[in-house]
Image 1 (cartoon, rainbow, N blue to C red):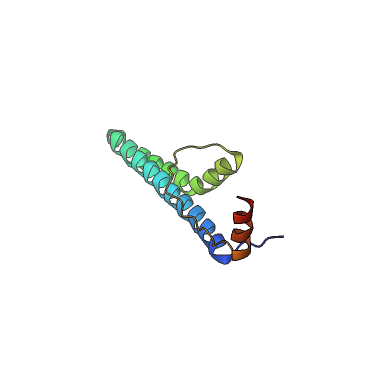
Image 2 (tube, helix red, strand yellow):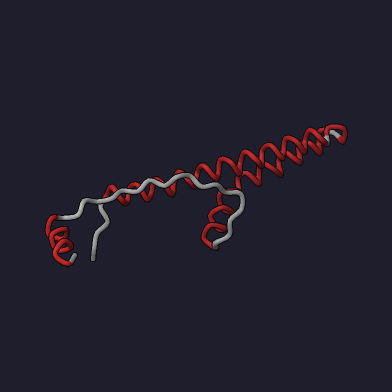
Length: 104
């Protein structure tokens, strides 16, 4: 069994972690902005309704990571964006390069 070098594992993990948290930050920002806009739009209806709207959107922000993980596992994509992925190429050993030259 071929082991994955630590650097390759670390880069794969960091790529996944950065994309997950960046997407989560964007989704949370959109939810918070929507909640603030809804609370502002319903300003004339009273403070109780504004507090209810803000609490509902706060719960939505707390549930956002769980829903994001479930959607990612199931293969669905919501509001996401991709960032460039870093990859590492490992040098080929001399034996393999000599063998490939012999076949050419």
